[in-house]
Image (tube, rainbow, N blue to C red; front, side, top):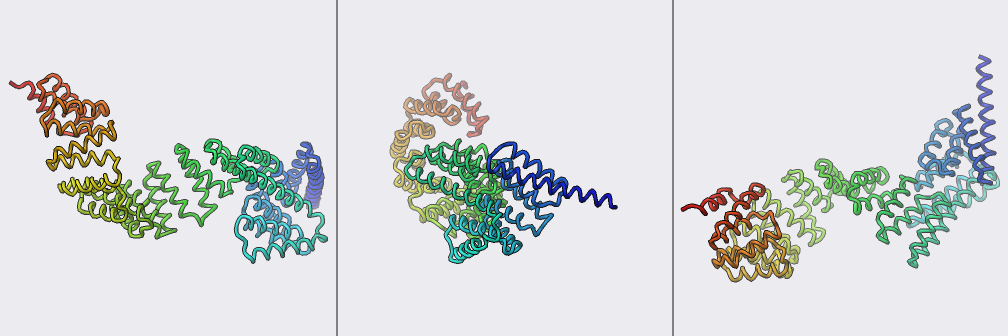
Length: 550
């Protein structure tokens, strides 16, 4: 038993000896920046913790030294401080160091909690945590509008800390380092902001690179470099800068949001990385979970992950139940998942909230299209289209869809009016002229139909549908196969997969008496129709066989 006590005592003495040697090497390293002093300090801190694992000082001092050297990040340093506090919960210094590292990570509230614990534990020797708490409050206030209570807190801790300095002179070392660090960072920031203000972006970028190296605050200065790269539209460099900042401090929520937004906008192939960034933001900014889930929902839609997209938008809505944009996106996700009744419900919710007439008109368009295309309910589709047009009379796209629904219902005259209304909104829209031309043809207004289709082709000579439809009017309306054929040929030049144009070209050649050419077009129409299924196959085969009947 006595031997065990003696061995234990020897271990503790060795631990204290190693700790003292580590302190001296640490001080020499601070003054001379010699690599051998750094290594000696590390070795002795590690040895001290091995001889006495419950020695808290070895953990937080080792963490500070390794962070200062750039060997670990602030999060690992905080974990080391937590280990120290597990062994010695009443160690004021461990609380101070943990608060210091939390402040570096921009976790100001957590830092201030630790500094207050240290103040209570240190008593009259609490000058250091008081001053550091004052600096933390000041740093936090620089990032947002200050309240009168916060200003009073800063003054209280700063003045009381200054008064107590006489009781805590040795502790000024870390305070001096902290103040020097803050002043250095602020100085570089002010100089960089000055250069940016006068559009000297290249110089500002170079200054921030130097600042990151000199101060070790890569998270601060590489975020600024990323901002400059975004301004100059150098998205690859912006990503590299934001990623460097993220690697240095994954807890910097502002940089993480910028990184997520950049990859989402400019690097769609990185959708999985972007999802990871937003997921990390959920833990850092739970108060922003609504918008984060909303962005995640859109990312899952890009991946065609219907289940997770629906779940994300639903979680967004739990945070803001009356947000029309969340309702609209959830409706679209339900539509993709073929849950049509749920989609209709949320589209109607979005419309009823109506944050903006133009936006609401687009939602009415989406809902009307669902009724028309999924249910074939043209009455309800037309009703929703009219609501959308009332909200935004300049929405030409919804007027085109209204015309399509009226055509499908057989109301040709009102369809013509809808297409003409669309043309009045956007006179250079070639699709509106083409649709109007087809409706006019259906209404036996041949000359007007030809004018509309010619106008469509004038606006866009590469619009294959207008080329084909104009050919049909020349062929079936005027009986001019020779005038019709060039339009069918042009439609096929534009779109070699156009089954109807092959069929119509065959009809034109048949009318012109060129059975061989007609047969070739009919055969091509038959082959293409096996893929497109635009026509009943019997319509083509009957035409093809009739060419050679006696």
